[in-house]
Image 1 (cartoon, protein in one colour):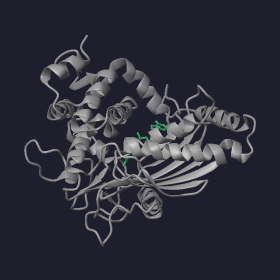
Image 2 (image 1 turned 135 degrees about the vertical axis):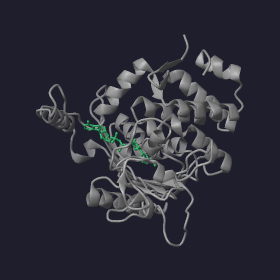
Image 3 (image 1 turned 180 degrees about the vertical axis):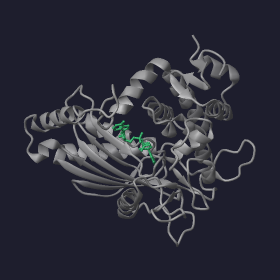
Image 4 (image 1 turned 90 degrees about the vertical axis):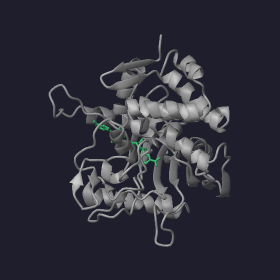
Length: 379
Ligand code: NAD
């Protein structure tokens, strides 16, 4: 049976063949099999959880970055400075899927031994869906907090301003429960939407909320085009080119939280803030400031922490829903619902995004028959 189904203006692709296609694409461009698998699994994992903006739509851009040397294949991080509970790590512009995993594993190892740990990751390639890292820490039984910025990506206007001064700077935290129980994962950018969601809207996918953008003329709008500006036929949208900006969520409060991400992930890690006067266009990278906490280090020798969390989750979810038949969800629950559905249906992709992914696979050297073999049919 073909891995592709066309329905309602979308292409539905089954997860495993998609992972294989992305993996073969990146081995074609020079990443090892291990790194290419990580990229395929993490990007399709983001689609599986409903975060299409951080999923396989990124394949053409990652490929472009790899070819231009913006991101480097198969990097091993450099631990620049460390003690028992802190590591300052240089990601050396490696793929975030690789250097993010290495860094988080350093944090997990230190916190497992000493109860608490901090990692400060600088110069990382795109770290994708930050929830991946909180989930990895939760699997090891750790609470974690991740503050992330995007150096070289000025696409968010501060509250009260029109000009771009910030990145989309996600904040993420994970709370583990018992083995076999899903963790709580709050994973959110500090802009109304991620740049990737504007990209999805540009590619014919889900439209943006009406307050997502500010145009160059200062009008609040849901039109993604002010972010990308005029484009040539076939040109991949570049968010650095438009006259407009994304807006920070929550007015002055979201803008303040975004600013804090720049302080922690940009300034404190040493990775550098989104932009500054000395360098008009800084080299693109993610910075990530992460904290890992073992509940046992707080005196929870029995299951008192997990019991308290479990009981509070039940209390919150017992609130009367605003919509008849609706439900109150806790952070991370929505993603699990979407994952259950998409595991059945396959991953919905806008046709233009799908044809870009196939085009990138061809650029990587895959023949039509190889692509058909992976997908068990024509793309
Ligand atoms: P979102 O708005 O879909 O979800 C944000 C949070 O709200 C999630 O924790 C989710 O579980 C929760 N949530 C969603 N619906 C809910 C509901 N009905 N009730 C209660 N809680 C609910 O996510 P987002 O803010 O658009 O973030 C998208 C992704 O982009 C994230 O994975 C983020 O890490 C990623 N991102 C990455 C970068 C980067 O540079 N690597 C930059 C920006 C964003």
